Image (cartoon, rainbow, N blue to C red; front, side, top):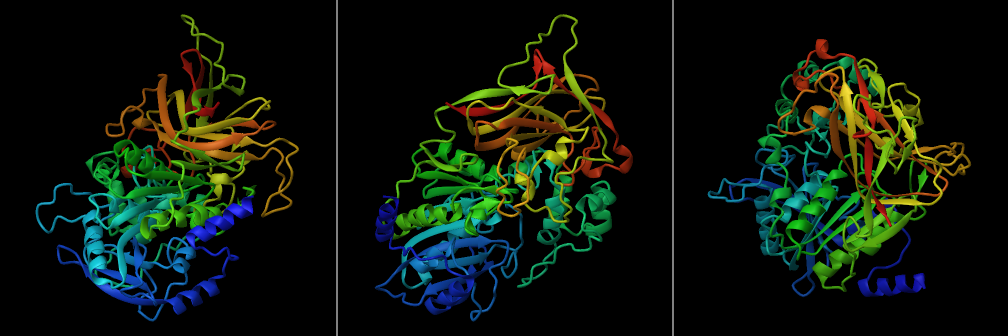
Length: 631
């Protein structure tokens, strides 16, 4: 039955069910079937944006194709009309299907003119020609493409992953009427609240420094060569490198010398101020005309926040607009490369990326741009990890969920029942405490590596559980499956001997002791007792009341620190256990908190101090992790 349905789908969409092609075959196909041209497309203010265009060779007035547009700050390389990409479109299925595929260097990057602005603020009411933003640059680009490319059918789609995902989001704001579908994929949406550079106000040091060493470097004139990334590490060990660098201000003094504009912006905007608020597209996702398909991965090491918040914004502010959320078991952009069968030691039981490309992505674009049959996608197409099954929902989070609380108990257990101890007059609340030492921060991974990577998102957490500065809470062996779908959040009651602190909370699936050793990368890997990270997040407690107006902690005072851990869709299977870990450093993924209320971007080595943190576990101060359980 399954095979028959797939064959019917193939006939309807015109896609051949061929074996996966090799890069060499893809490259040859592109050269045989496409002509490449390069153009400088003028914007309304006179700046010209470098654009690489791949045209089907059989294009004509009688044989027309839709346009696919990808706007990127990462280069449209290779440059030169005789040099071709080795893969085109969101996947090679699009190239073989037949599309005009267009790549553009965004304003101020690589070969495009103008000044680059990372996540340029949107201007709702443009009054003069120099009032430009990413929405207007897209509008002008689409207008030029539709008017100047012979053989286009007048329909345009946009897509992009990561920063290009942000640009895809902006194509749906004040959009050109020819744009029929936009697909922001792992879109950068808010660099302070949850994407890339910060999470809940905590600075993501490791990824930001390595990335901005190139991305934020000066580009005086258009060039086909991106700036090189920092490479003078002197060690393969990031833990050693970042500890030796010391406070954040040392990076500018010793390496950037004040020349990296985006790094400077990070250091000058410590709180969620107007600078950050102006750079998120969420408030502007109103009156969205094209269909929107948002894509993300549950193991995305960079932008899990973006797809969830983008989908939510489009849905809530444009209830009549076709809008879908696709979430699979992928790292950043994993749906566009590889088969998606596994990550590290974890198997998913199917080629999830191949499934997405063939049965979700291509049919949707073909419907809106080629008038092919509607694939009738559910509003939320969600891969449930643990169960390793795709779920179809008519909303996200699904209707059949209830909020439940996983309470942390004084005996180190974890359950959906609160601690029985009551807060009697004069009674001391139960708590666990640990010493947090900035000189010996908890590492984010057990690996020795210099570049962050993605493995920490699905890494065995036993290396952290054994540290004295990591609190561990574990449920009994589950007698039945527990499935969560929706938001995960931490609600901690804490105190500290300092005046600031970070709190990292990790929700973990603990495998049974007799779990089979079925790792796809290491057959000798002992999976019995494996601690799979389902969701982990950090909160800088100075922002516990306001991300715009930080406040110091009062030493010894019990305070509530509640924060978004983002969403999850996971089944904790019968025989497994649920674990929560709490710690106060995650280094060097996240910068070290001095544990003193200061501007951390300007802090000196003398500001860093040891502090004892307490997590409270009883009565009115019962700490818990909130989840949405499927019933």
